[in-house]
Amino acid sequence: MLDKIREKCVNYETVSYLICGILTTAVDFGAYSFFRETDLSVELSQALSWLVAVFFAYVVNKLVVFRNFNMRPVYMAKEAGAFVAARAFSGILTWIIMIVLVRLGGDRGFLYELFCKFIVSVINMVLNYVFSKLWIFKKKPE
Image (cartoon, rainbow, N blue to C red):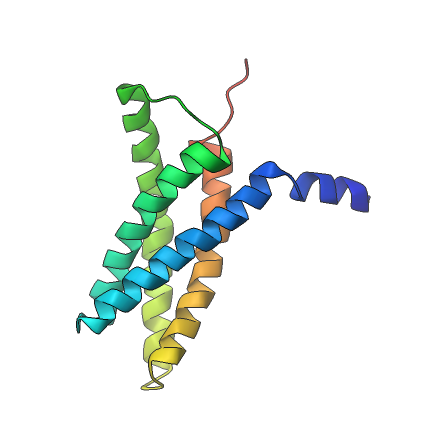
């Protein structure tokens, strides 16, 4: 039974998704930190860092994780639209969670904000994998 679980969970797709997810999270954290350093609000910094991360995630998920090289404009427009829609849903949900966690924590400082951002990122990564696997980059039967 453990072999079946390992076979299902430890493969190119899940490992590359995890690595690309960590890189996307690093892009998100970096962008968030940059925007906060420019004195933008938590709300605006979270929204802008999300946009930067979504663009990065689309590219690496398409090319690296799911190895989808279909570059036809109509196909990519539909695929990118689905990707952005799924990310918008998870982005809004995690944006709300981020704001609630930061506000509930009071004025605990930037490290607390980054801790909240980490919690939100884990939730976001799981949701986004499910959307990508089952909807956006779903393999079509040949």
